[in-house]
Image (cartoon, rainbow, N blue to C red; front, top):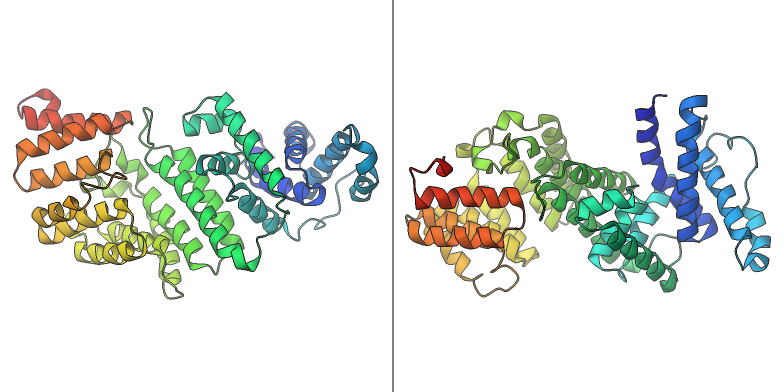
Length: 419
């Protein structure tokens, strides 16, 4: 097995192993340390000696032995050792094939629910999910969240302590809270994907690694819960949106609006998969916000040109979504869709309702949409002011560059910066 294949396999197995060890020993912090040591041992041994017959079982065995050592050296050894001895695995060789096959997906799923525990803040949920389930290092998470390694370490440490203090058992949530806990998991995966798709800060427009990690985690969740329509809808949404990422940035990294994108660069394989998923999920119902967003993305992706986009259908879908999710971002997108059907004045009328909404009225997206609609309506002076406000509010360099080009174009159409 070559090094690259070993790394990919270990990345897939890491959350399964961590989940299995936490389930058996109940100590998240020590289990993570032991799992990391098992992964390091595999990186050294497998390329040299070849992978074991049961890679997951081998890793669980090594991590469990290491955790037993850690627990034995703990001050509470006398209270724990008798219990730990009953969990200890064989000292030599890989466990028999299939020993740990049962529940491996469940362990990953339980781990995902633990990382998204409601006692944690959203940013802590994201950091812990990327670490424990995604297998990212602290440095990788720091780059993804545009934070220092020290900050990320503190966040993850506090998050693990909060889970420990909460006394939550290593098990799937009970039926009476599963729906609400699942919403939290979906939200975390959605936030991770969004930060990858359109980075809020920094010099890069798209964080492909982060978006694809969110897709990988969504696939894991979908494999465990294939009958849940919203889980399917979220995976479909990610695939349909990420399919366009190559066309979203120009050669210099700057933003390319969807209307100007080269659609031959869109990933048809991902589009076909996403459309198949959402087509299968919608009839199962009840229809939720992720399914509706996926349906909107599918309409965009099915159009072979911007001019042939079915805007009436998109406007109708946003209208339904707005009834389910009274979000200012949804309202903003609904205004854009309405303007494409009924003209810019109709869209601007809808935007007036958002001018007093503190959740969106200082956001780059609000000012950029308003600028675009004002320009469509022929009010260049007001559009220029709105683009300037959008640029001032932008925190991503590439988004800022795009907005500044619009400002230059309206300020001086003959300027080279306007081209």
